[in-house]
Length: 119
Ligand SMILES: [Cu+2]
Image (cartoon, rainbow, N blue to C red; front, side):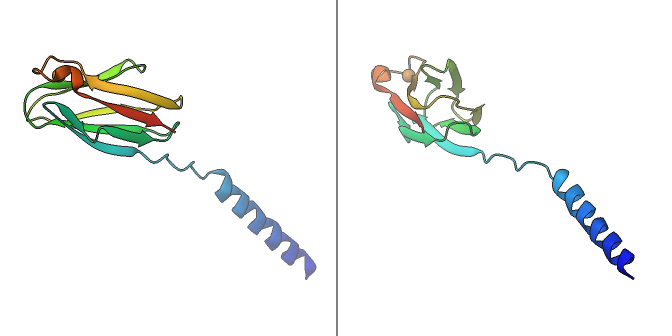
């Protein structure tokens, strides 16, 4: 009578171990931020994200063509009027990174910038 109880206990323990062992790791949450470029600003002009988690920037232009380029990460994406552009990356180092427009878009082009803060 005692043997079936031991076998049942072992069976349940193995079943639980099998379920726990095959569980996929939870996907990391994507940090999604919409950024609008227009003469001569980005909205928002300050974006805070967490290091080690995927970032998806959804970039659009409200007027002429722009390009969002992140200094120090060597990545950028055009913001062509009428289109939606996706820029995905995983920030690995904490710090503040300036982003700016990299296409001459008018008289205020040099002032068109923002900051990406990786925490
Ligand atoms: Cu510009």
